Every structure is written in structure tokens, then in C-alpha cells.
Image (cartoon, rainbow, N blue to C red):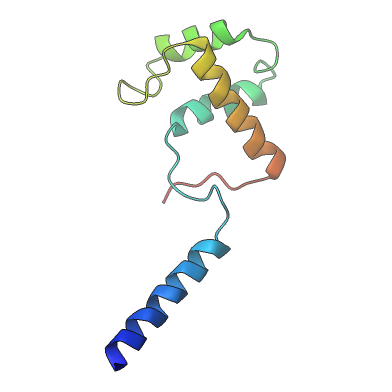
Length: 96
């Protein structure tokens, strides 16, 4: 019974540690896209460019490669909305 109790305890500790972590502190799928958003935001262009222009820019620059490629304006708009949500929450965008 001792090993079951130990494994249960370890499992409980891992679940508790997971619940205490920030919700968006983990691997970010579109980190280069978010970097591009941050750069455009920093130079004051993110809010002035149309989403189609941003999409063309990131595709022409080869940002996010083929595996995570943003194909259309609707998808880019969703990623931009996620990026803004991260900013509003003050979340740490880290990738281990």
C-alpha cells in the first residue's frame, strides 16, 4: 500500500503545481508571429495596418513556417485577438 500512497501523493502534488501555474506560461505555438505583433506594436504600426497587410507581411517574411502557417485573415485576426488578450492580462509569454 505504501507505493500506491506515494504515487497518489506525487500525482496530487503535480496536479496542484499545474493548477498554480499561469494559464499561458508554456509553449506558444505562434511565437514568431507574436514577436512580429510585438515589433509592429512597438513601432506603432499594429493598430494602423489592416489585417490583410499584416498577413501579407508575415507570409512574405516567412514567419511561422509551413507547420503553423497563417493562411487567411480570419485566422490572423484570431491570433491577434489572442495576443491582445495576453497583453491585457499581463501574462508572461514564455517558452521553456
